[in-house]
Image (tube, rainbow, N blue to C red):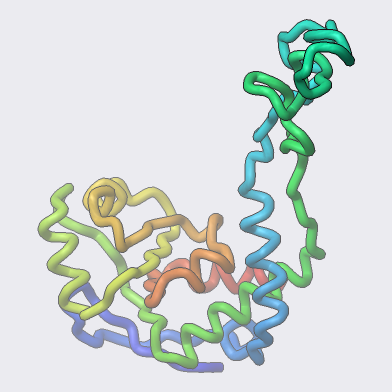
Length: 207
């Protein structure tokens, strides 16, 4: 077991917590992390971009003028891609960008991301994150006491004071442990875990 310090909101060490080495001490392999992050980003794409080809635009299919004798270049119909208002050549059509990965690979990558944060001393465990009220100033003051920038905060359940106090802070993201994912862990410099989330995360990744 790996032991880490547990802090309160005043950045005082109040106890210690044990972390399962099968989750927080996994060898980090960049190619696995890359595969999962690419999959996540691809799955977030809507794939709704669409254009009309020459057969779909609202234009007449009649030849604009005769082939010979006018002194002008030969021409087709008004829907030609070379004319204004014509169709688009090889334009995008609605499609699925989903890239599936095995569940085991997804869990392993998340373990690697958590291990990376721990190894680089960017993982902080808090006893709780209970703010007295909904106030952005108080929340920012807590974050500044830890001297962090661009942080991800993971809670066990709904925390209205925390969630609403952090809404206007662009460099902080708050999520519940069910939504924990590789991209967000890697995309934020520091990771805050409320102590009660640790056994829930370990249970989900080791099942």
